Image 1 (cartoon, protein in one colour):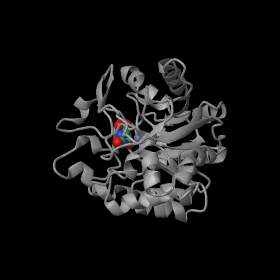
Image 2 (image 1 turned 180 degrees about the vertical axis):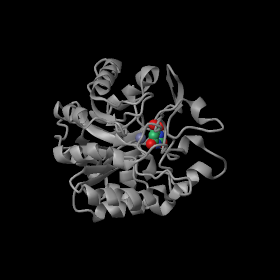
Image 3 (image 1 turned 60 degrees about the horizontal axis):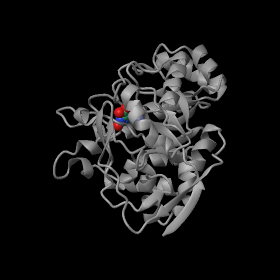
Image 4 (image 1 turned 90 degrees about the vertical axis):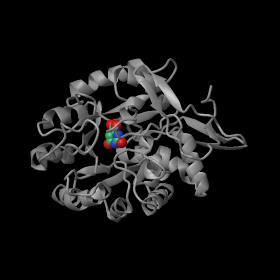
Length: 349
Ligand code: DOR
Ligand code: ZN
């Protein structure tokens, strides 16, 4: 048996959905995480401060008894977002960031940005007030190969935007390529990146070898092995610009196991176990806390959590359910394809 104690983690990119799905998944996050940046891509999306306030109340109402958890709310950027509403939401402390989805990039992104020119007033205001833009960094042009969409985004959208509004703080979310890692490392200010658990574990073979495996399909799609290795190196480096954003994105099985399945991998329930395994494999358990609990709050200007959690390595593998049952239907749990021995003490009933 081996124990390590770290500050309680936060998740800097999470999909909680709404209604029965929210009720079914929230406990898997609040069991292990103190806070999470909650994505606004509901249907319809969370576009105003009033929408976010109501959504936050629904999240808090869905929390299991005895769990304490702080949802950090985001607004979904559209071409008609009102800069004054964004500023009021930010200054009131309710809104932590604005999320940019290029229109059509992923699940529920139809209302996203098509013409960046129309979003400039909001982006300029955010730069003035020190508010962070969370970016889904993929272009959507049909002539760009899906495996190249992140790299092309950096060159054609992100870099020009940073040159135009250098004071804008940007989180490149769920980076999946060595191009993104190198780009972040080369920056001198106002840029950071979140990395998911699953992108540290799978490459694109997981989706396609031996049959199509929809539960490994997400966006941005997992890339070649060399990219996974670059993400691992960044995550374990201790570099404050890289931190955990699980992008845990539940869809009911029926929406994934079909002719046109949704993107999204559900990892909230076993993320900490998976990460302890990855960091141990990399001989970097001493840097796990930086990735899960220190770098994210520092970037978002929040204190690290005072509470600590102990992770324990057991001789026998843990048993996680293959699926969780929610009122909306079953959701398949991410299978890392290796046995998990690390547990959060006191977390498994
Ligand atoms: O895989 C993903 N699922 N990527 C996203 O960007 C959105 C998310 C979702 O909402 O399901
Ligand atoms: Zn996401």
